[in-house]
Image (tube, rainbow, N blue to C red; front, side):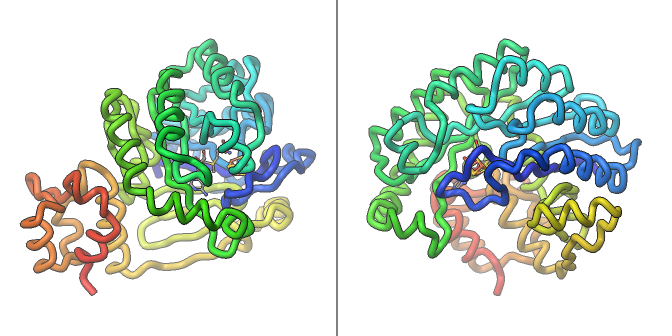
Length: 365
Ligand SMILES: C[S@@+](CC[C@H](N)C(=O)[O-])C[C@H]1O[C@@H](n2cnc3c(N)ncnc32)[C@H](O)[C@@H]1O
Ligand code: SF4
């Protein structure tokens, strides 16, 4: 096992668009949660594991503060190999100089900071709390603590966003000098109150989706970033090794409430319920809080193909040959949507803009 994810389902408040498992407040339960997570690590991740990547995600892990996160890190570090990448997701409004310093001291060496937008009106539309200035302040705090590997998360397709506002957001992000930028198109849960409130604006944004995506790619590539995955851009050498492991279909273990794991053909996830997680954890009853499924081989191969094609380097054809419709593949190669480079198939630039369509055609029925 080389990759470990730990979920922290606490946030200051819930952003209206977000569908990740977390709750607003409830921090009085954070010490018990950390205790439970530490017990789960002891149970699931042997001392000698030699982890290559660890990702503390959420929710908002940084809301727990330096002391609790350092407790987790002390146990995690003992299971890491040399040079492990250890990321913490941070919400800017929760970051202080002290927190940044204690994370650095605890061994964290990568930060993924949720900016989303620098535009106050768009932030209001998202229901995103916290002042815009906190983004720059958080980066300054992490830099002062010695962090070099700092990523910023942005979104496009926000209700009310036009091309000029997107360009400005990208400029503001680049001015802060991140090593990595994730820029996700806003996805909205069907039937959510967010969708009902912003139906008209979301329709406008969806129609501009392709144009906005091109703006994102051209701007970030123009600034020297590598477009190494559908929504992810990095300065050379700063690609997120943990997320690359997901896209390469490698095994990973996820701990904490709601976290997913994938080992061989087996997938499972912990219950998305804080109370139940704590209850089962207190008696070491880990199996009772999980739901397992076994994926058939064909499904895993099709999944490897879809995940692999998200990355610029694509996927080794010999590993996914069983999932490919060969006639469609020939057509996609001939029409310039797909490339075969030394036995690896990958999407061309043109193909990457219509990746879902290409994958749908390429996959055998
Ligand atoms: C789970 S969040 C955790 C980060 C942190 N809580 C924050 O909000 O700053 C990780 C990232 O997912 C992205 N995200 C969350 N909800 C999204 C949505 N509905 N559509 C697209 N991206 C989303 C955001 O860019 C966010 O920074
Ligand atoms: S976007 Fe981040 S801060 Fe907002 S609710 Fe989701 S996990 Fe919490």
